[in-house]
Amino acid sequence: MDLRTTTLSAAGHEVLVLDGVVDLGSLPRLHDALQKFVGDHAAAKSLAVDLDGVSVLDDAALGLMLGAAATARERGVAFRVVCADARLRARLAASRFDRAVVVAASLGEAVADAGA
Image (tube, rainbow, N blue to C red; front, top):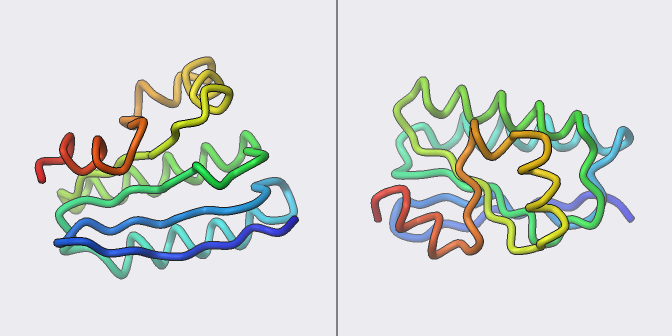
């Protein structure tokens, strides 16, 4: 299964939705999608990456998301990750990713946390 990405927009809050497998083979696609997403939405109220459609998440993908979060923060834009899957949430906690980036259980929670 390949990685597919789509973007959604609602009242200035932008979402990059990931669907599929994020592994070594799809890292270039994720990198490009994150760069474009953060670059194209520098004036957004908040940015969120939705992981609910992801079945596999490579460690290197966490590094790419950390880099995107840092770029967004430098521009004064809130950056969140949306993840309802308990298994992936546990992984984000075990890797301490959730200490660097807010992980919300739903898109509504992410938007509210970012100051809707």
